Structure formats: C-alpha cells, structure tokens
Length: 303
Image 1 (cartoon, one colour):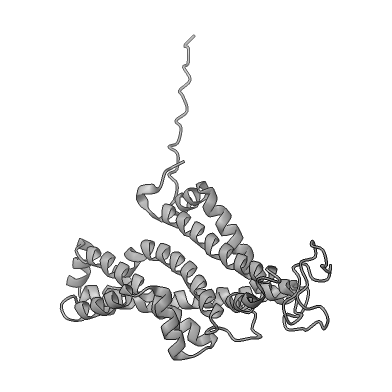
Image 2 (image 1 turned 135 degrees about the horizontal axis):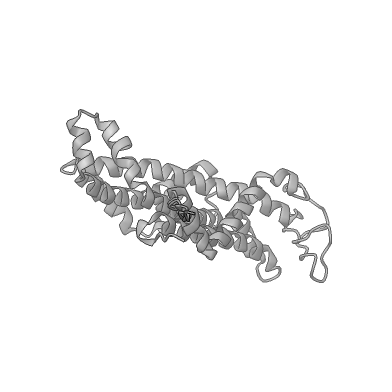
C-alpha cells in the first residue's frame, strides 16, 4: 500500500492594518488622549443638550436665593446643586449653557483662523518673492506681541460682542497657521508629484488646495487642536475683562468676571466657571497630543 503524506495547509499572510486602524490604535494607546477626548465629547454633548439637561432656565431669577453655596455645603439648597450667583440664577444651568458660548466661540475662531491662515501660508509659499515676504513680515510683527495683549487691544477697538470676540481671537490665532502652512508647503513644493502636476497643466488653485494642501493637513490638524485650546482661554480672558459676551449671557469668562467682586465672600462663584475653562483647555490639549502621535508616521507602531 502506498502511504500518502498530508500536505501542510498553506497559511494566508496576515492582512496589514489600514491607515485608519493604525490611527485608531496609536490614538487609543495614549490613555491621556482617550481621557481628554471623552471629557471633551462630554462637554460637547452637554452644550448641545443644555436646554434639556439644565435643571433651570439660566436667566431665571430666584428672589431671596442669591449667592447660595453648593448643595453639599452648609446653607445650600438641593434645588441648586452648585449654588446660585449674585442675581439668584442657578450656577449649574448657566455653566451648561455657557459651554455653548465658549465652545462655539473657540471652534468658530479656530475655523476662521485656519481658513485664512492656510490660504495666506500657501500663497506665501507659492509666490515667495514679494507677496511671501510681505505676508511673513506682517505675520512676524503680529507674533512679536503677546497673544492675550493683542486680543485685548483688538477687542477694545472692535467693541464688546460675541461676533467681535470671534473675529478678535481668529486674528490673534491666525499667525501660527500662516507660519506652519508656509513651512510645510515649501517642502512639498520640491516634491516630484508637484512638478508633475504643474507640467501636466494643473491650475494654481488646484495646485494649492488639491495637490499641496492634503499633504500638509497632518501638522495643521494638530495645530488646530492647540489653537482651539488657546481660543477658549483667550475667550475666557476677554469675557473676564468685559469685552466678550455681555450680561446676562452665560459665557464662562463673563461668569468669572462677574464673580471676581464676590471672590472673598463666595469663592464658589469663581471656582465653577474657572474649573470649566481649565477642563476644556486640558481635554483639548490631551486630545491634541494623541492626534500628534497618531498622525506622525514616525510615532506609529503596528500592534
């Protein structure tokens, strides 16, 4: 009888992970980034659902209940978990609605600064002789001023309102986008794919925004998260000084500015909005660190 030998089964080669899987895996390995993203996501959900989650109307005045301490302290009322402000309004409700103001201002200013900064940075890299030198000269002048001081000056000139606050912060946050976009685009302009696209007759707008810009997005996304954090802090500072959202608007910086005159008698009025600004900025920074690790090819590791 002939003896048949079993041929070993050929094992298929493992499928390499996709770019999206590498991104998610690298981001999730950074525990701080995951925690920061969850906190930020919670704040966004609270801001969007504030009209339904808030226990009271943020503008409702409770006569005789002014400056109540939090419910867990002596003299607190269970109706107001975080106490009331100087006018008898519920602090928790105003914090929830204040997230809508602060996050919207930060996001809008970052978006405006990114669009204008990227456009100017790309054009400065594409036409470096006269236009590029002029753009970078103005950019260096703006960056030579402390951002908060420049924001206060512009806000004082434009006047107090939410729209002017967004414009102010966008102007202050634009220079880093210009510098980063120009530096990244200058490298990409030397690549062979750009030369090939230009030889094939691609137009200027196509070269800038379809050929060059996608290859510059990774560092710009990380920069945008850092600018978002700075925008929230600067919005709080402008509101604290009275140049931002005006009372009775429930913006965190404005709440902090109102509470400063009562900081010795009722420190809780200042703690809660200050803590909200701190948590928002910290969570965005942690998320930005995770995005930087996940978008940098040198830091990606296949698990």
